[in-house]
Image (cartoon, rainbow, N blue to C red; front, side, top):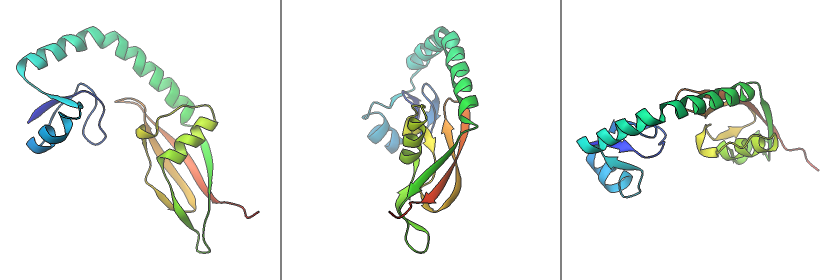
Length: 149
């Protein structure tokens, strides 16, 4: 089944992309949740007209994303977490904690666009931030043991 996405969906596509999905996924999840519409001929024509009108706006959005990516690429974050004797973290450090650390540095980044696996051990890791369809930024973060008080 071909559908037109109404919003960005990780591992599937971006807003206004026409993608093929299995019938059940489209009819039972994407369409009822308002995340997609069926790609009929009339829907494709409307999409083409809207894309033509939005072309210059998209160039500005991409330029803003590239500027933000240039600022983010050099950032190194240090996150602390409680650890046991083996160095294993209680719980985990993931995208939400990276987003909080970025917010503390003045960058309001939605945790949903941060692709970072949940970290369970102390060490240095990299998170990829999907700012735009074609623009990605990499942020290095170090997970350190929380100091005992």
